[in-house]
Image (cartoon, rainbow, N blue to C red; front, top):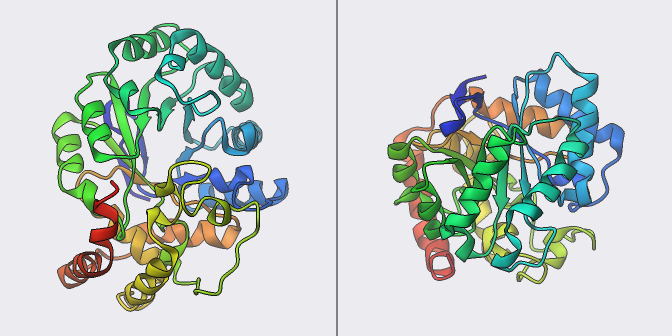
Length: 327
């Protein structure tokens, strides 16, 4: 699989990574054996990048990755985790002592002395502009707790603030055919600064797979049930913040753009991969088949300009007014 340098980390990672939010259990129950199967299928398909967080299943995702990599010392995988959502979301909690505490927990979960990359996990907006926060992150690097640090953001303005900081290695942001705003300023700024871009929520919480209808019912413990309007965390993390009915209709139209031999989900991933500035896209998976299919998107031919134009047209007609007003 194609490898790209993840910004200021200097490390190469696969253009399709493995998101592991699903493995924590926030998308419904996932058995440990199934989780290991997903990770193994991803590695066998050429994935060299796992993305996780300390709150995915209250650390379960990190623990599963740690146990898997301990059993697979031959797997050359770069692991990015996140911190910050275990505390009340106020800027005053983003201080060095808390960073060390959160960091210690993640290192124990993953079974490593030094984390490859730690990302601030969508903190309050004021955190991105705090000199003290970046001084604390620099201290983590100096102490050998982390090799590099980065941010995960909700808005383009937050991304641009972080990109301007010389120590920020990468920015994780929602990007998919239903969320095009980062293309305007964020990706060009990242390219200029040498900052990596990790594209998350690439399938709009599964909408872009084309598998869901207006009658689809998700499990009660699935965030696609309990967070549709931002009840538990930012609304943009669920269906990219789009009204579900709007998303289903748009996804049906998107499915018509799928080239022969590909699925709608692979088409969405291929679209993200070929956006200038994107380092890696991190779809999740709950089965071996999903993990393999996601990885296969990296080997699809580039989408033609006619398809790119059709995606833009679909976005402008169905999505833009709703999404741009919020993000």
